[in-house]
Image 1: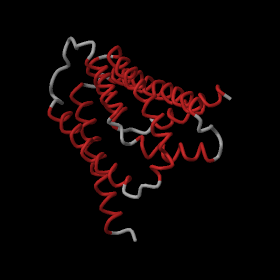
Image 2: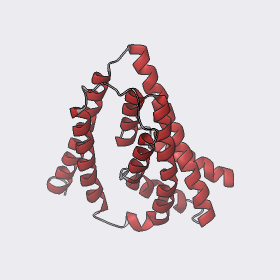
Image 3: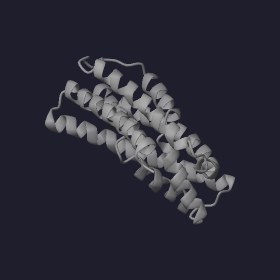
Image 4: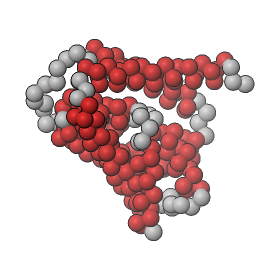
Length: 207
């Protein structure tokens, strides 16, 4: 049962990080600009925070699912987050990669984005409530700790594959740092626009 709980957490969060979002796009940027070593530091720090993040959200999943305005709040937070990250990436798109980075820079960035990860809130609200309600996992403290460890492992595994794939694509197709940064900035802006359009639709057109 312990292994199954861990495995469910790993698979669930692995799937959760497959779609492009602020975390995996940032990771791609770090991999391209700073190298795989810094990417692994980022992933390790982020996954450590993901353990605590998952544990808290799973505890609060049922309560959060009853908050009517939570989805709207998360959408507007994502608009700001994607907009800021897109702007920063855009203005630095032409900057050449630095030769050396502080060994703590990627770790701090991973910790920061681990806490600034609102897209995972609705994911765990739905996934967590489903798993507990259908008794795939127990909602006891020990079970949720093991599940959260699996969640952290799933995030690490998925993001590590992202980093390796980004490095492979860069080397295989000799893509320039400027092109990659520009593409990531455009994606950030596109995600921000998506959340704005979504809220406009929900507010004025959906009845």
